[in-house]
Length: 178
Image (cartoon, rainbow, N blue to C red; front, top):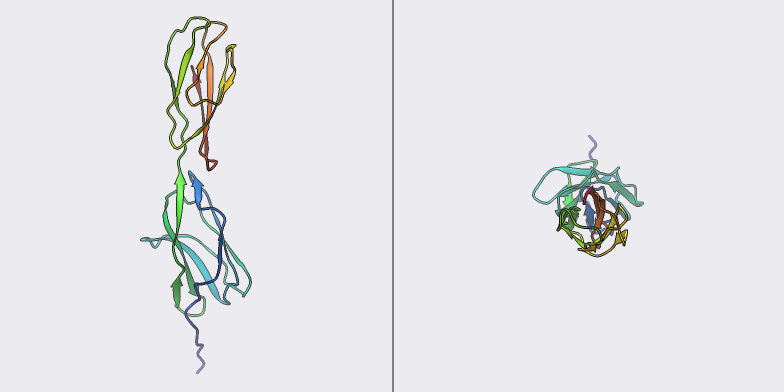
């Protein structure tokens, strides 16, 4: 009779994680450096057995795991599992933050007169940078202020576009009448 002796997988290999601050829902790449032969790696969220991706079995070289889309922040970890036996071990957990930047605004004045300053108020979530665009001949067609006031050369409805983004580069935009 033949049998194979396997050891518990090593979980001290260096990991390269492509990003731990995600926007809405994204995939990440995790590279396990100097992988173990016959060990594959599974991404899980702490407190859950849900799988967010798995790698091919290791071969001594670097192994890449590309996750499924992640849309929930929390602590995640890699489970190392030997392909030849049911031996598993867990890497230390790492945190993932998921930003949910949302662009929105309201107009502070309805039926403004020609050349009357019209205030626009951002009501964005998780945004600290803004780019406004205004139609219908405004004195200033764009602004990067959080809450600009704009005067228009002509009466009539204006279309307003707001692009909002976080310092980490999570973007959202909205266009509506102003």
